[in-house]
Image (cartoon, helix red, strand yellow):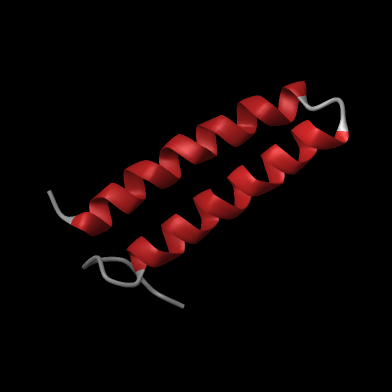
Length: 58
């Protein structure tokens, strides 16, 4: 499997994770975890779309 597709699957995992954490964030520690998961998912998705065929890169 291509490494870029692994980035897509990792981005999906962290996307689901931060949505779940967003519902349960009640203190600043859990908010920091949510923000980190948002950053990781966005970063992985951007990195994967730069090299996969068929995706439009900005």
